[in-house]
Length: 419
Image 1 (cartoon, rainbow, N blue to C red):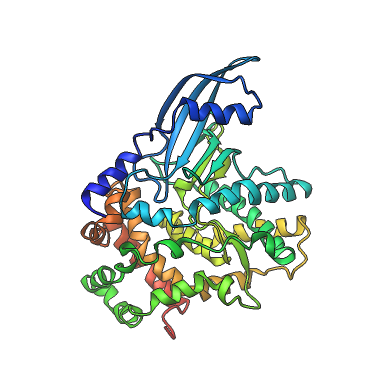
Image 2: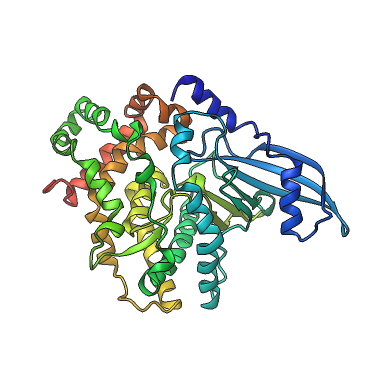
C-alpha cells in the first residue's frame, strides 16, 4: 500500500461514507421496528473505535433520533463496514471471507449457541443483537451499541486476572457448544473454514518477522544459544503454521480436540462491564467474529497467551488461566449433554505443545507488535505497513524481557527438540 492509500484508509476510519445517512438508517429502523411511517429527525455519526484498532473493518457510532406513531425515540447504533477508498488493503479485504463469516456468526451460529446454553440452564449472553446485515451493495452490519449498556474497551491499563477469567469463561462456553455441534451436527459449522492465515498469511508483517527476531537474539549473549533453532526453521515454519491452522479441513487428527475458534482473541475485541460502585468485573462481551473458523482447540489459547495476557501473567499465571478455561469447558460440555469422549486437561496441554510452531510464530511475529501497541509506542497502521517500524519493536525493553522469560520456558518443555 502506498503512503497515499494508507492515508486514505486512515481517513475512512474517521469519516463516514456518503451512503451512511438518514435515509439509509431510516429504512433499516422502519423494517426492524415494523414501523413504515418511521422518520429519522436527527443523525449524529462519529468513529466507534480508535484509529487503527481494527485491521479488517471500520466502525462508526450513530445516535439516531426518530419518530413513529408511538412517539419520539433515540437509538444508539454501531455500524461496521469496509473501507471505501481504493488500495491494496481494501482489495485484499474485499476478496476475504471476513464479512460473510461474521454475518454467519451473528445470524446463525451465536443465536444457536446461546439457545443451547439456555436450554441447559445457562443464561450467558454471547452476542449483541445484529439488526441489519448486507454484502451488497455495501458490506455492512449494524448492531445495538454496548456503551450505553455499560460496556467499554480496556485501553489505559493492564487487564486484571478477574477480567481474564471472564473472557476465558465466555470463550470456553461457546467453544464447548461448538464441540458438541462438531460432534453431532458437523454440517452446521461447515462454512467456517477460513481464518486469519487464509487472508493475511502472505502479508509482509507475517512473512518478514523472522530476520529481525534472529538479529535481536544475536544482540543478547544469554539469547544467542537459541539462534540456531530459529535459523533451522526459518524457511519452513510458515508452511508448518499454515498446515496446523488449516488442519480441521485438510487433515483432522482422530484424537484431536477441535472447536470453532474466535480467531482474534485479544483485548480490543472484548468489551467489559464493571460494577459502578466496586469496579469489579460483571460481564464481558466478545466482539469481532470475522476470523472464526474450525481448528484445533489450542489455537485461541496460544493466541491469547501472547495477545491477551500481560507479560507477568504470561510468565506466572498462564497455566492457571488456561486450566480455568478448561474447567469451564468441561463443566459446560457436561451441562449441554456432550456425547463425545470428554477431554482431559493432560491432553489439552499436549495439544498446546503439539502446536509449538504456532506458539513460536506468535512469539516472534505478533507479540512484539501487540506490545508496541499496548505501550503506545507505535500505531497499528505503522506496524502493519512499515517494515522499518516493525523492526524497532524487537528492541523494546518490554519485548526483550518477555523473550528472556519465554525462551527458557520453551526449552524446558521441549519445544526445541526435533524442530
